[in-house]
Image (spheres, rainbow, N blue to C red):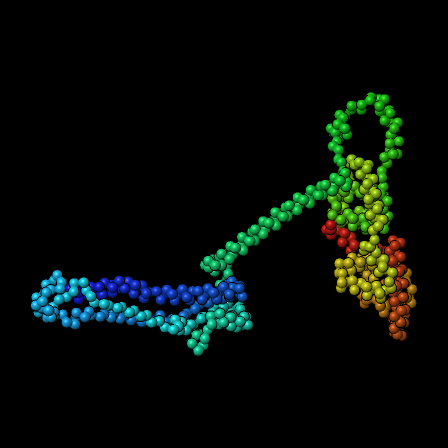
Length: 502
């Protein structure tokens, strides 16, 4: 009986040991199911963010899983040969072979337990844990249908959905909240934003450092260039504006004799140090304006002070008004420049101007040499390819349309300077607004004659173009003589007033 009690106790102890593990294994499948669904959702969400951007789609995966398992335990035992015949009748009267004496007729049990036991434990699992899946994709309502279909195909291929197994995939469109309201609830999105913010800050700081370095380098190079090229040396004035620091009322060193000697040498010094003029022609003023682009007003003032008066007047007139005022202010300041600097500047300026070609004036000369029809075609072509150049050239070329810009008094002078037969041939080419203004200024009888001549038929294109060019030539002559005002001068003046780098 003792042996059976021991066996029962061992089996109960073994079952008690298996009980906690069995309880733990019952809750384990639900955690595995949740982890599996989260892993699938995260994988699909990462792909959708790459395809659509953040806050455009959300995936929900519901997996039906089979965690059924069957546990089978078998216990096999084999009895010893002596158990089959527990009574030892044989040899009862003989000598006992062992130290234990047994009386005849009583069973003998081995104290050591000679019974053999075998335990066989088998676990049976299903062939597939996932029975079916239901996938729901919530996308932004503003997403196009084509992108929604593309998402459906991508998700189906990623999750290997099988309709035969019972898998379902549904795409639901719904309005999403703004990104700035939902981004703070997603750790992945916050980390992504912080990463890009850090990269942006690093890029901005790097650009600022590089820009500051370039600015300092440019400033140093500009200072070195000014020192090396211009050698401008400004001497401070003495007390109360007297050069050399002499007090007012005190004689110069050397007394009266020195003053007389200085007075005697003054004409020779004035002759030797007379003002240097740069040899700049009137047609080189546009090139000079181009050379002065981006220069400091003080340097431009130094150059303007050494130009001939008529060239200086034309140069200052073509500068923008605000910049020209700064140049004039710097011209009023007293500065002391070495003669070698002036000579070097004169030589360099004349050398560069001597080899200057092109510019707007060159284009104007080429266009003005064409006839009227070619001139119109050229301006139209320039307007398509180079609008800025066409606008600048148009300010300097007088066209038949510009007759409407003439004042009443000026247009009457033009009407009286042109013959009636030229007006007759030119009326076919002039705009309607110009014809109406000319009609008001002409005598009634003269206009009737022109209308009657126009009713006979249209003259040849060459004759009409020749008449219009003759009128344009006479208008240009009147403008050049100063008898009428240039209607395009106001537009050129406005263009000079606009801010420009000079």
